[in-house]
Image 1 (cartoon, rainbow, N blue to C red):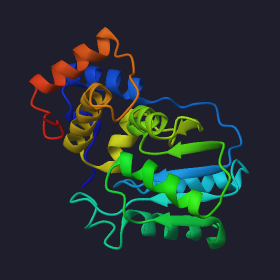
Image 2 (image 1 turned 90 degrees about the vertical axis):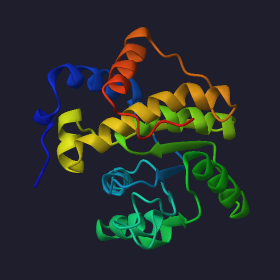
Image 3 (image 1 turned 180 degrees about the vertical axis):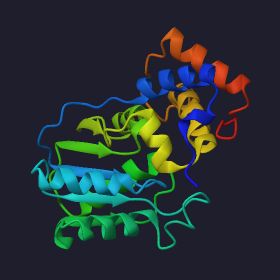
Length: 221
């Protein structure tokens, strides 16, 4: 049965919305050399990638992702493989899609794709990162650290927080992921894995409120 956003207490809905808005970069869509669809549990990434391909925004697609404990049941052959199949079902020619099947985190996604495209001698000056809606800021910060000379843009399905919660069907998971990604903005920058991003006071307060409410399963030490 679908889980509705109404199950989130109102005071936590406000905090979740603050984090959701912070992580959504939603850059203006412009033509780029290649699109990178970041693997996850959300098939909407592949659906949206196919939609933008048909709008003529890029000539090549790379889907990157192996499996995680949270995705192996949904995508048993690997996130990238299933994303490719979803895109082909939506009319994207198979020959324009590359897959990278070893990446297990966002840093892997970027580093392995960089090596892959260099081996393929695919010229890349600009790239569109396509991800879960709330993964955009972390993906951008990671990509700019690993591949600073590339012009990155980020986008995701144009969903409201409520719509995303309905599509995923798991409020607990989404709130835990929002909290985890917010923590990683600072932790990963401090560790040298990503460029620094400003965290406004209201975002920090919303993060702390959700942590206090028990949404801690995606926090890193």
